Image (tube, rainbow, N blue to C red; front, side):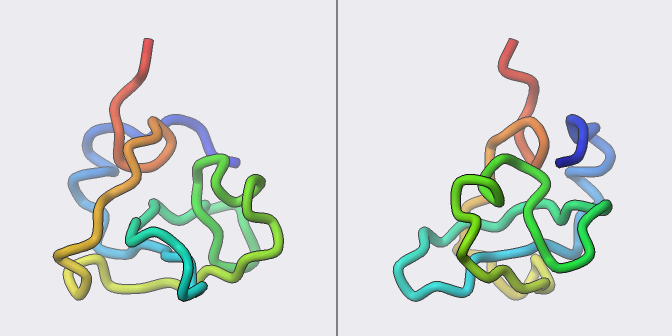
Length: 78
């Protein structure tokens, strides 16, 4: 799992990951730079350990929400 994303990283993100399950919520996540396979930087990867994620161009999914976890596209919660 990566550390908290900076505002610059969130603003510049043109690549994102999404869950490939048809039952998953329409949410884009910042990719975990340390992962070997496409995984979100937030704890979603640990919660949905069996799910597959794929890298996508964030601009291609304008209707998807961006994950608001601080490790993805959100701001610090504290």
